[in-house]
Length: 593
Image 1 (cartoon, rainbow, N blue to C red):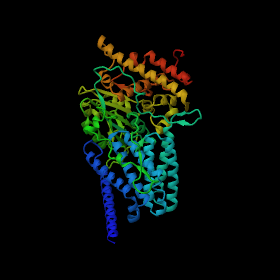
Image 2 (image 1 turned 45 degrees about the horizontal axis):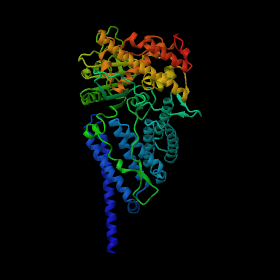
Image 3 (image 1 turned 60 degrees about the vertical axis):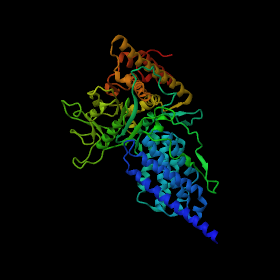
Image 4 (image 1 turned 45 degrees about the vertical axis):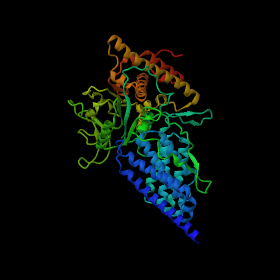
């Protein structure tokens, strides 16, 4: 009898400990939303405590599953909710650190929820709030799979989500059913827009290609002592009004964030372990994966086999207010280490000025609409802007203070050229890449919704070239052959940039601005510069893109004769066009082999 009471007392204490850990984990998780989204050091200690508690909670429910099942009434959806929170932790940690390996960790937990069917009985609980949690889980899992380019799984999840939304609507007739229908339509539209050009297997099934940076896709470079800068901080802003989006990621943001990341590496440890409970069929993500590898700014994080992190730190902002944008810019500016560079990428609609004789190029030429939020004074902001200065408009002059440090700016807008006049008051390296302000009528509707052509060139040059030549699908063997021409172009352009610098030193001729040389040593910035050159050369030769507003610009200007109009680059583009059987889209030039 005494032994039985002792066992019951132990079980009671286990249940109380579980309840304590569960409540503590909820408090910490809810507190995450109160943390500042900017800066590196303000939040990492809190994240660490949250990971610690979830580690204990996850291990505890594994080790004492039998007792929790019988004495607490632990349900599978509750285990799924814990796993979902851990998946969210890893995803948000990815957003804060830009390290793609954390995406893999989030994926493992989300996949376990689906594989173990933790939410399979949610509909039988007669709780609409539980069904909403299940729908939110699906939406989050889809985002992670999109970022990892698991498109086959994305399509399966969308089908399942559609079924779950229908069941939720039929069962509860909820007020938010239209919102969930909109979420479903958004993701379907996003998937359709993302597949700009299909690369096909021999059996005509599509192949999913990754466009993150890898050792095979990193452009070659002849190093010099002048290449001193590395990209450390990135701000990616998406404010285009009509562009396809999902979960506060526009298509341009989605493409650019991948362009500025390295290919994630697979973890050496096995992602799943058998539960410590008696339910041997229940495989669960290993708790040893928490906490993650390290946090930015910590010694171990920077010294884990390398002297730099894999990816520059970045912020993602969807239609921010101008105050939010400037705060995040200031944070990135503040966090820059010695020898670091800040990149600002903006995809936005233009705010246009009607000033006929502008005197102040910083504010009288217009700028970019950062958001379309209502303003209590002027009643709101239209995407096309107004004749006077907008509250929610980023002007070139707003960026002047940030040029005190090395800055690399990419503007993708129909008013991009107004940023070409930013002065270098402080003598720091500054490069501005600006998109064409117009595209041929045949592309205007698609580009407005499916993502910018300029960003597509920076993301996947071959995809962009196929797109403007109306090539909708390419067999994989043909794609790989064409990719060799793109690689040859990039290699030749890199050689020409280096050659320009050597000629400048030896002959005293300033062929290329020193800013390009200083940025050229960084893999990401070198890739962007060389893909910009590819974009400029291709659009200059393409018959459909006539007029200076249909070609990109850069500041400082890159040399024409020695680079942008160099015969060797044009020749490779003609060869590539011939290989794709689209030579007729391009102006007359030399016959290609």
